[in-house]
Image (cartoon, rainbow, N blue to C red; front, side, top):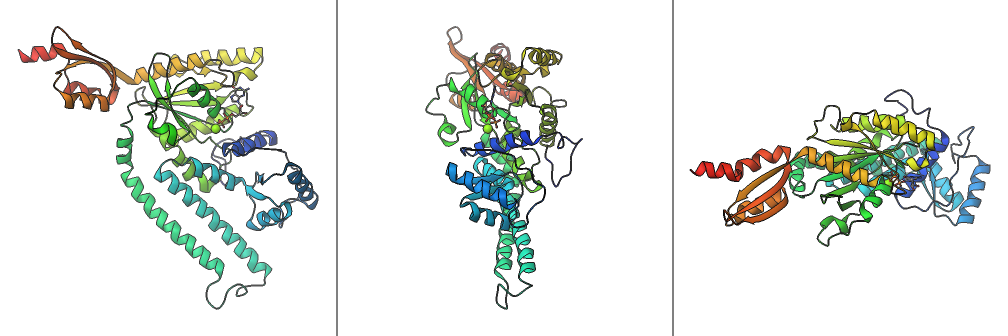
Length: 438
Ligand SMILES: Nc1nc2c(ncn2[C@@H]2O[C@H](COP(=O)(O)OP(=O)(O)O)[C@@H](O)[C@H]2O)c(=O)[nH]1
Ligand SMILES: [Mg+2]
């Protein structure tokens, strides 16, 4: 759920999330930026200390842990004021990152498009500005009022603040420009001749594990332009030979701070482009139902809705992951629940960690892809080089061969349903063409 400022967007699943589940999520988030988590724990707080957030004893205890593990970073899954952050960094001699800082770091690494990068920078600056304001009032109070820091002109903080405002304004201008040209970018991106399969789901649902499992068997061809550029995009060959691009995405995060919502949406942009969406769910998780609701409501806001979306528009496959963690009875219950769904909405049960169910998943993806794409048989003149290259650019060529009888090239191609008419209009099939000539 995207819950900002403590406001629930639907019935209070926040209360249902246990401290242990929240800790798991925080560890997952830290791993998402490749941090090696030496120790994780829950701290019970009775009162918050303005200077250090934690009480004195806790600060000392953690200082000991930092030393023992030679930790370079302490992640606090809460919102710290700049002063608290600074004081803790001094006490622990380590970098301290709070929840918003951590999430911004993840988004920053994953922003793939210009718009995504701008959105993340915008969120970062907004975050900094809010902290400046806070420390400003803090200092004002502490130092007895205006005039202590700067000369007669503006204070350093005011200057910082103005600089941030200016950069924000510039980014907003650029964002507006990028959005105007977005449609154009989409067109050029769609030239990738393979369908895109995007993985979405909560942090820790197992997206990256599934991504690795799906892609490990595939030997990448050297010309896969993304392979080296972006570790979260990979080509995968499905059992019946169809090639797809699989895309891992930033996971959903519970209690996403409001100012990060736009940045988060930007990281999901490629999902809007996807031909098939795999919604990876941890069915062994105690919050599985609340998480489902959250993810679906965000997908709906992105204009992706499997109730209204027709088959050729977009296909969401629910992937029920971690079934290896269920006991016999639970497995049975989950399997029955899956089988009660209509065939087009039936989830696929897998254990990404063990590889169980991967064949079924591949078959399900192929079935969904085939449902949205049509096979077209056509013929063209061997001299029609322009036509041939058009087909290669706009369709997936399944078969191509010279017809000895007619001396023409017979082709079978697969195209998006929306493009099929254009293909047929340009290349009528053999019989019609002959008929037309008579
Ligand atoms: N038991 C079990 N654990 C899994 C499975 N898939 C993922 N995990 C574990 O769940 C945790 C989160 O997985 P990860 O792929 O990083 O999730 P992501 O945040 O969605 O990318 C890791 O500790 C994985 O080892 C599974 O099928 N079974
Ligand atoms: Mg991941």
